[in-house]
Image 1 (cartoon, rainbow, N blue to C red):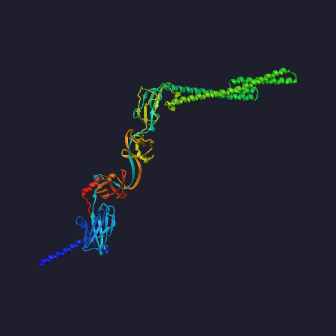
Image 2: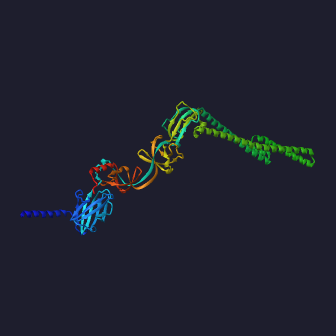
Image 3: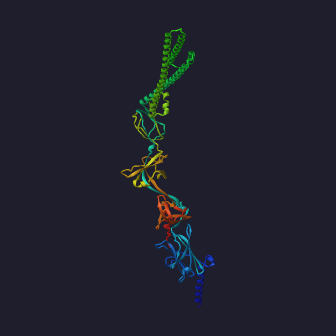
Length: 579
């Protein structure tokens, strides 16, 4: 009997002890009601619907994430040993994720309570279930880890992980086209001698840099010497013609003054005095005596006229005096007219001679300039030693590089020989073929991208051919590229991207960051030491950035480089998809 009592006592004590254990570590009741809390191992307790099973005081809930052909939603089945009116059950589930907290409410739907929102992937969270039924509050907690791994700073460094903040990017729609680097044909010059000669000295070789005006070679040319002599002769002829013209102007002006003085009927002594030191020339010799003779004839005529009126002289004497006066007057007037005309004509002739000589000087000057002499060199010719007349200095006509050379010392060259080719390599062209079908999308000024070493540079489409190439059905496009570092070599091939359009997107990630995980495209976001797979809904890509439509927020950090290491660690850790 005592043995039975002892057994019964042990059973009763065991029940009491079990009840005490089940009620350890309870939180304070919600709304001052008793609360039941239990952290359940999801792998240990499953209900008949395959969900997590939580039981307390005869009240049992089975939490199932249902996603069979529909977006994932919570379905909660409630029992208490007998049917439970779902309208009497209050329920919410709080999901604490790395980046946020989701609170899900429920309402009856058939034989279960249905969550009011989709359970977003990944299903990795700390879950708190809060239930109310018949005045009692129940609370259960569960941790569901999926697609997550923990990395220490050392592990991050060893894996070579590089993180980047998600943010807006510009997606560029382009077409890739093969291109060829070429010389900027607007900055290429051919150096030709322009006259026959023999090479005396060469100062530049292939690849040498040259500056505008720099001497690159010297020739010996008889033709140049002749041209210089013609120029110097023309200078002397102009000087002589100018001196003749100046003297003729002086003679003409002085003659006009003499004619004016004679017209005033002044005393001969006064006229002589005023004209004494003036350069007049032969017209003085002719006109002064004629004027004196006219004055004398006039005086005799007047005297004979007076004597005739007084009856002292005969009429025949008067007529002789009159005829002599009129003859002298006619000769004087004719001489004045001739002197005036001859003076003007002589001045015009001297002026014409001067202008012809000036024109000849300009012609010989232009000839020397056309042969390549600088204006300063031409100006210095009158003082140059004649032994240098045959030396012809070839000068560079731009700042650039010698890319072709076809002469050696002692070689005879012709005036049209192409002896140097100079190019400015600080700027080059990139020519590329645009398919005919793409032409409706192309316009001048469009952006063109290309890679120059580690950098991606851009330029603008500056030329578009008007002709379609018959065989390839393409049109040549062109951009002008700065090349100060000379790392773009003409003749080389390069791939360009012709930008057809640009669009700014709120969030984008780099393509290498995206991994395939289960049936998702994911990136791995970083919160503290944890990295978690984040399923993404992706939009368009330009190969450098991928648009994110859903799944990643602006400012979140993601593994942009070596993200495969995170995937491998998650798969190794065995974080499963368990609902």
